[in-house]
View (tube, each protein chain N blue to C red):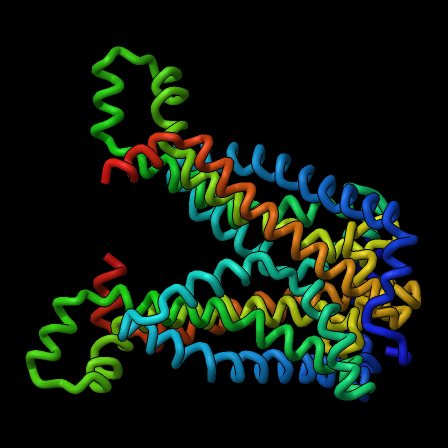
Length: 231
Length: 222
């Protein structure tokens, strides 16, 4: 009960909601880093996945990246980047870059695999029909394949977003701020309220990300498709 | 870092015994989590197959647990269960459910009703049918789930280093190397933990071949 009270007190304390170490500032750091890495990753992974799915070329790349992804522990990846990023910049290379780069890597495979699978699994008869109607390849991709593949691509984006938001917490161990910082500080200062406050904030943010992207997914999918898959 | 060379081989040479101990600890922490996680997942999957209404509840709970960051869960448990192996194992076990339960359920679902009818026609009892027909046919998907869970668990063991020096397996070196700005330690811990995950992944390919000889025979006929 002691921990619960301490946590509630810490979360309710107005002093913890202002300044550079305040909850809004840490939340912003956390979300900014997650958003930036997701965006950069999507810029590369989505077009590549769509291209591979549409043409069927280089599909081995998708399989091997999915396999490599599973074997790459983020904790090790962030750590392994440190000796190299500190060569580029002794300060940011020790605090920001390792987490940022690791999160870009982490988001890639779910985006790549799902955009590939979504497009590749579109009924080939539909694609042939579109071609027969005189649609260009680009039109087939944007007008037929992507709308049909959207639920699968959306799932990939949600998986990537949740993974990144949750895993960015590890960045706090490696000098990055974000909400995980409270877990470290609380531990160092023997402040249970701060430590558990951090745990609660991080868990809530991860679950909120999950819910938000699930909602967006539902909005984006064509009503015709969702009616069919909904049975 | 600190103008030191990237790798100091002499440090590795003089710490081989300790590195070996950490590899052992890493594998032990992972193995306990996978065995316990598999037993619980199997029970959860079996219940879900019997009572279909429970499956969404089980699946959603597993997904929610998986969403909670590992670092947060380890940190939270320290305050409850202290610096014990339980603190390291509980999150690792919880994270296996999301990978194992759906695969075990899908494995049993993949057994065709015709095959079950044939088994009944041959006079198998329910228990015999389960052990000699359903279980072997479910093996490929169950092993696929185990493979995912093993690789993921080996990765997550590194995070348990945040509990304290006596945990984390190879993750200890990553954390200690970062805190001391000593790249040799980071590289040893990071590269070896990735190597363990890859080796476990390959090991499962072999186990699957061994457990499902008919799959290879069928592939050969084709």
